[in-house]
Length: 483
Picture 1 (cartoon, rainbow, N blue to C red):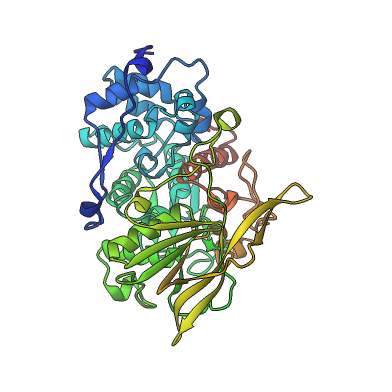
Picture 2: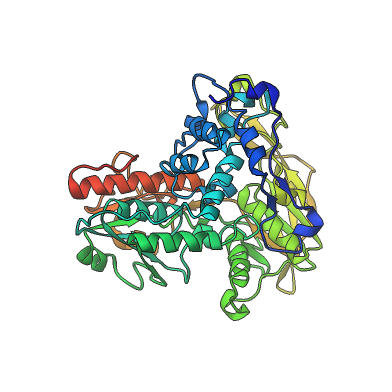
């Protein structure tokens, strides 16, 4: 390493945020980059730890000590080349990834891991600023055509890798814009959409064709694609939200989180209200908002509600409150269960744990409150956790808007999944293994959340890359694409 004693001499220092009052007035990103010299200092903290557990913590297996060393030595362009050898879209993961690599960092044993996510993001951002990131065209074509269904991170990564292998991929997206979850699921204040647009331009220059507004299985049939293309890759994500099956679910004002988030992203993109909200505007302005679900999507709902001007925001989580600090001896280097506070939660939110919703209370057809009950989690005779209601713990929350952010149960079956005839696994995902990503139907592959279930953007990128290699091998007999 460039500075073997750096971790002893330099304290961890990460990117800062704009003040809450300022950032709530805008939909722009609010994370302030570090000056380049400070990034170099932080990279110098990467210790010569022998076994870089961060490699295993990172789903795309970024060569983290290597690019840290290059940044420390002020060799930013070489660091970018290293980073892009394993990750197609570091500007996405550098903004929205929860950084399991940092959880696996050896320095995290003492709760001060290297600022890997920040370094990664600033490498790629500098690469764009300096003009180092250019289209990587294949020197020759193979004559093979591949249809990729879904333009989220898995579909984009798969298509880009296939184009660089010389194939001719076409990405089909049912929405009006390319990007999938990146475009309509992640708020602009976490990731501005010009980042997607410039990647699309790069990919178009590399030979990727994009077709927005094409819902495979509806607009165009699966069989038609199989007639026209050598291979079809299903990368449509896990879009089926988990529902709240309680009395009053049908009341006006109870919505899936993605309905709420997508509307706002469309407004930010310049769409009229008629286009952004054809079924009616969902606004948190002046309302008492209850977000059910304690994950990232729930946090996105909190940040969006606060920017709307909500009167109050309450977030409910069915699980018990996790510990503030994990037991390192039991968890490290794996991802730990511990209490985390997102930037959106910092902006204003009441959090309540171990709470179940019994019913939604209505007034004139609209939701007015939630009847809830507290839970306790106990280990049953089968060794598994079971929940039971705490007697006499019922309470009611005022609620003008309820947002369901309880995760996703799998892909939407209507459309491409149903039309393909591909077998599903017991969880309802498209069945395919990670050796060849082949479904039960010849010439149809699957990757990303549609195959593995709800997961992270970085896992989707990994699966897209690996699926591209599997497709390349199937088409050509061998592949030089990395896994």
